[in-house]
Amino acid sequence: MDRDRMTGLERAEFEPVVVELPDVEIPKGEALKRMGYPTASFELQEPVRSMFLEALGRARALMRPQAAYRALPVESNDGMRVRFPDEGFFIESRQVAGLLKASAVAVCFAATVGTGLDDAISDSMRNGEMLMATMLDAIGSETADAAADELHWKILKRRAAAAGRLVTARFSPGYGDWPLTVQKDLIRVCGGALIGIRVTPSSLMIPRKSVSAVLGLKQAQSWRHQKPG
Image (cartoon, one colour):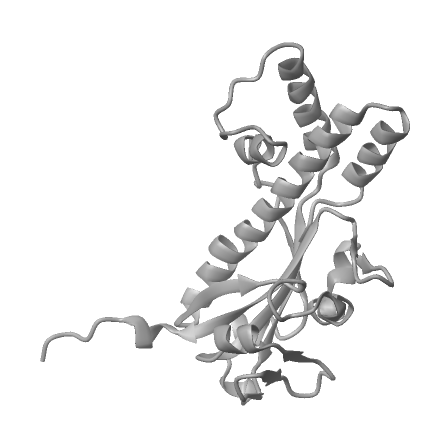
C-alpha cells in the first residue's frame, strides 16, 4: 500500500496508538451471568448484594481501561495466510483469513483494565475471601471485554468511517484455528507493551484482564446501495 495515499486511520496510525478509555462502564449484569447467575437482572439477596456492591466499588477504583492498536496494510491473503509488509508478522488461520478477505487493512489491538485488579484478586484469594475474588474476577473479565468493544465498535468504527471504511467483526488468539501461541507477536505488533501488557511463556497476557484481537477495514462503498440511475 502506498503510504502517501493513506488517509485517516491508515495514515495517522501506521504506528501503535494508545487510547485511554475512562468512560467504559462496568457491565454489572454480564458480571453476574459470568458468576453463574441465570440472568443479568438477577436480584441478589443480602449479604451477597452488599458484597457485590463493595466489589464494584473496589474494582472501579482499581481499574484503568486502556487500549493500544495498530493499523497494518495487508500485503497478501491466500485464504490461509495473511502477510503484512516489513513486519516479520503474519497470520496463519483459515478463519482469520476469511474474516480479512475483503480488507486492505487489518487492525491489531489489545485492551486491558490494568494490574490493580489482578493484585486485588490475588490478595482476596490469599486471605480466603473466595467470593470476593470471584466477584472481582468476573467484573474484571467483563470490563476488559467492554473496553475492547469501546475501542472496536465506537472508536475504530468512527475513525474507519472517516476514511470511507467499515470495521469487520474481531477474532482473538486461542479461538478456532488461530493458536494462542501468536499472542506474543500480536502484542508486540499492536504496541501492547505501551499499556503494560506482557506475555508469559505459556502465551497468557499479564495483566490477566486483557483482550487481544485483529479486525479488518473494508471499503464502505461496497456495502452501500446503488442509487437509482
